[in-house]
Each structure stands twice: as structure tokens, then as C-alpha cells.
Length: 210
Ligand SMILES: Nc1nc2c(c(=O)[nH]1)N(C=O)[C@@H](CNc1ccc(C(=O)N[C@@H](CCC(=O)O)C(=O)O)cc1)CN2
Ligand SMILES: Nc1ncnc2c1ncn2[C@@H]1O[C@H](COP(=O)(O)OP(=O)(O)OP(=O)(O)O)[C@@H](O)[C@H]1O
Figure (tube, rainbow, N blue to C red):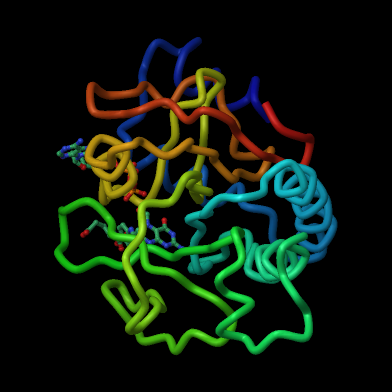
């Protein structure tokens, strides 16, 4: 897979336009009968990562357009907190040191805001019809789990083209650790990063974490 796509962007000498590369990568998201096995493997990798995290706030995403769905795994992580008392009321449980947040778009072409989320949080439909938490506090996550349309060997990421995560990583202080979530079939040699592209710190695929 990698060699096939890298020949698109390198060997021919012609770098395809971003929009074309985006379409190619979106078509590489595992689908149909193959999908469940890829999701199971990616869930395993993600669980390995989450097991190393405690005492932090994770910014994740509500899946759209065939993205990998990590909601259940994040709920498992929240509930497995060594600090959480399973007999406590939900409000008390949410004061544990494991917290999760979801992006909220208040203004298009601005950085993302993140608002706390638990399974009890009411949701509303936000920009691009993406569900977002309603009425919870804004936070700066310690770690961002970032959906990728594709990612390259230097850990540069391609998304849907809104530039939201690059703007967010450039704006947030302290800067969260940026961890990309990608299907292995969407890893390519180079996405031909532009000046504003910020490399991810780590990437999680079905094959592990790098
Ligand atoms: N699940 C999920 N939530 C997320 C993101 C994501 O990638 N996945 N985002 C990650 O950034 C932000 C939303 N980013 C988006 C960026 C562009 C488009 C979009 O529809 N773009 C148009 C083309 C550009 C335009 O006209 O604005 C399109 O694809 O038709 C949608 C969401 C925040 N929430
Ligand atoms: N730090 C930034 N400040 C201002 N504009 C930015 C910044 N980063 C990106 N942009 C704008 O966003 C546009 C889209 O960027 P890009 O194609 O890299 O999006 P993407 O990473 O695929 O999208 P997304 O993060 O929303 O999934 C760029 O052309 C640029 O105009």
C-alpha cells in the first residue's frame, strides 16, 4: 500500500493536489467485510496507549464519515480510573483525574475549543453536523487523539481540509501531545506538508504505536 501511494507522490515526480490525495486516502479507509478486523486491531492499539495514561484530560473526537469510533474505548478508560469509585454518583465519578473532552467549533476557521464530556453529557449538533457536548466546561486537554484522513512517515497529518487541528495545536498553551489515529492503509510516504502543518507526536494504527 505504502509503495503504491508513494509512487503517486514521489516516483512520478508529480505531487497530486491535496484534494485529490484526500479523496484517494478516504477511499482507503477499510470498509465492508474488512472493516471489523481493522477496527478490532486499532482498538487493541488504542487500548495499549490508553493503559499508559492516567491523571490527564484526553481530547478525542465524535466519529463522522467512516472514521474509527473510539467512544466506547474512551468510556472504558474513564470508568477504569483507579480513582473512580464505582458506587459514587455520576457527578462525583466525573471528578476523577481521568477526563475526556470533545471539540466544539464556535467559529469556523478558528482553533477548536474542547469541552468536557462523559456518557451522561447532553449533545447537540454543531458545525458540519458534528455532535458536540452542550453546557460543559471548556478545558485544554493534555493529549489530543486526532482523526486522520492520512498520515505520512514523518508524522504529518491530512484531515478534511479545514485546518482545525493545525490551528488548534498552534494556539493552545500548553500544547497538548498530538496523537494521530489512522488506519494503516492510509499511511503514505509523504503528504507533502505545507508550512502550517505540525507533525504529530505519535501515531496509532492497527499495527501499533509509532
Ligand atoms: N470526528 C471529527 N470531528 C472533528 C474533526 C474531524 O476531523 N473529525 N475535525 C477536524 O478538523 C474538526 C472538524 N473539521 C472539519 C473540517 C472540514 C469539514 C468539511 O466538511 N470540509 C468541506 C471542505 C472544506 C469547507 O468547505 O469548509 C468538505 O469536506 O466538504 C468538516 C469538518 C472538528 N471535529
Ligand atoms: N496555524 C494556522 N493558522 C492559520 N491558518 C491555518 C493554520 N493551519 C492551517 N491553516 C489553514 O487551514 C487550511 C487547511 O489546512 P490543511 O489542508 O492542512 O487541513 P487539514 O489538516 O487537512 O484539516 P483538519 O485539521 O480540519 O482536519 C490551510 O490552507 C490554511 O489556510
